[in-house]
Image (tube, rainbow, N blue to C red; front, side, top):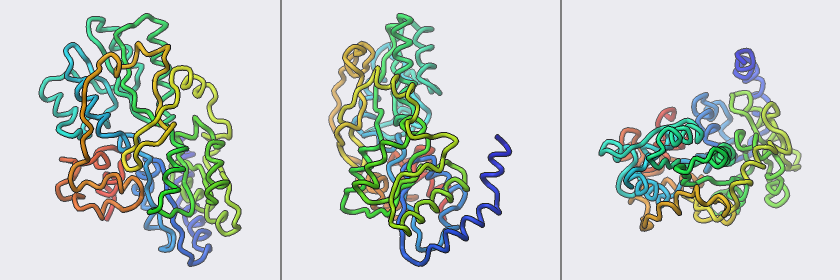
Length: 361
């Protein structure tokens, strides 16, 4: 692995790729990555500054924490307040602001909040605390959904009846269609997500060249990966032959992980999903199937939460859509910064505003 990482960060290889990319010519091209890990890698390695000025990179809605709706976060906050509840979630969610507070502030006030690395950790916690009700606040795309499904199935098999899922998982491909058909963002090619694609494969992206007429390339996360992906895209643009290509062949194939997908759809079924910045998109949410509804925290804890507007001045939704960069948000690095975030994009390790703040000029 060390040798592979060294190869994928090799300065000579990077220079050779940049030379080929610069041969494309002066025509302006806008490419968008739709994976938060890509966003952070692009900033961390300074890839934007390496590229010729005519090739513009935009960041899209690839951060699952960031696209989680304010209403969902407020629902998690209300469930966390219920007597006897242990709320568990990934670390990125703890400081994300709801309409009035955050999980971090509630924890300081005394709620029982536990950070876990996997839903199976939350299941283990439920088994160890049979007198408590353990809720896992689940966020993520197709990458994390199979492990959440596995936790539900394991709970069922082991007879653990105090474990619940508050689900906010989403599926990516149809959201990309909405993004690409929007009127305010023009994209000439997509850098498709690597982690998501290890599960779903490349087939779900085939509508992008077929219907949208633009290239789609699945890439890995190292500098050589990303630059190879960009080169593949611009070669497709040059030849006017858009298609789906896999640069990240060490992790992705056409069919994806069929076992993980079978697990996912054994427990979940498609539902409408609300994306911050894109609104409600049919079929992009995942809800627990009827036969597993005993594990649905929304049914176990039917809290009433009003739907609130986003904070005044926060343009996180526009940033996620690629309509603006964080530098165009009036709150960025003023009232909104990592120590006191206003929007989710400043909190998550995959957030666009967090990347601009940490690595931007």
